[in-house]
Length: 486
Ligand code: BG6
Image (cartoon, rainbow, N blue to C red; front, side):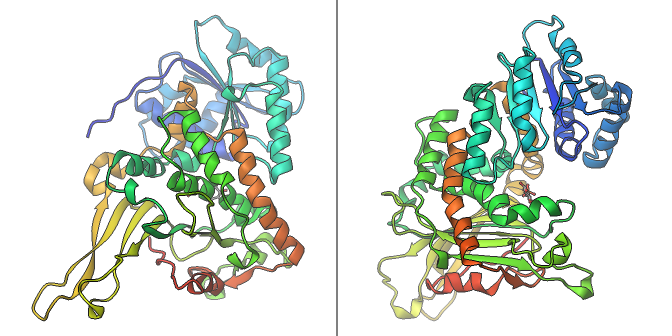
């Protein structure tokens, strides 16, 4: 399989928060990999900014360290060549210091260039940054990239959208949900709309239910204060799982372009019914003294915390395609394995010609998003041997790593793809303002409901599959979760 590397236009990428965690862990290593991949044209420039204490030489050594720590690839010579593209300007994102200096490299006459500003800073700085970029004459034709959390509820998301819209058109705003940049998440669209096989069956007539699981083994280390304010519902469900739900449930867009895809996703979110209180389960992980693991409450230093590190819920989409097919979504930290998977459970065949003894058999399509990306289709066949017609379910299994070799086993990191898409001006994999607001409009009543009820999350054992109540949620419907396996 040969990958096609199409160099992007020359660009100036300004990173606000250029010394921060996200820049060091994700943005800079992603840029370096694209540089190594030959996608960065000569003359592309990366300008790190922060409030102070550095110059270009100092910043370059910070970048080199970050690449060693978080990228772990490339020779010294390659890193040096990349660093020549990197410079630093001291800019106060919340004040006026440094802005004139920032304009200098950007204004140098260099022919047409793409200009982008990456807001890798706290959301409360977004409005001020947008205003200053505009006031200093750098907004025209520029693109801005903003990171989650995009608000903490509908009101704050609206406020943020309005602040950005005061200085930028929607076509200039790139709201990142890094799940959309994952290779296999995009594969959801390829599997659904590139094959004739699945789409005719992709509705409530044939699909019994769909399970979406994003399980993590990590806990909240290093982000305690943020996480205890957010919880799993805001941190994962409102954005990443919602995006997966949209891609699984949406109607085929007329074409693969940004507004066509995002229009269809928005329709899914707007068709979601409010979630019933008894269809929600929240959990908090317990400690494990033998393994030296703190409980959630100990980890965040809040002995009375009622924030969930796990949430499971049953959602319904009220439209022609999905009425009657429930979607079960769950996500949590400190679970038994890191595994993101979507299971599409088909209905039993309407009539068994093999009689009662053959048992009940239903097809299952499992789409593994990470790790071990791939798909498994469970089909029913005859059990080999004598003794009549006994049926057995067997997997048709494909691991993308095995099927696609090198490229399947090393898919590009989400940030590599997303940053290159911003430079190309392709918004398909970014959330539109109305989409984010619709997702909050669905999420807010869920959170308000449990807050008003004084709901306390159920404890669950570290390295388990979550609280028992989540199993009950399924069992009450005569169903069960698929296991969580690495
Ligand atoms: C982030 C969340 O958006 O996604 C984290 O804030 C979570 O809490 C992370 O751990 C999961 O991303 P990934 O790519 O590791 O599945």
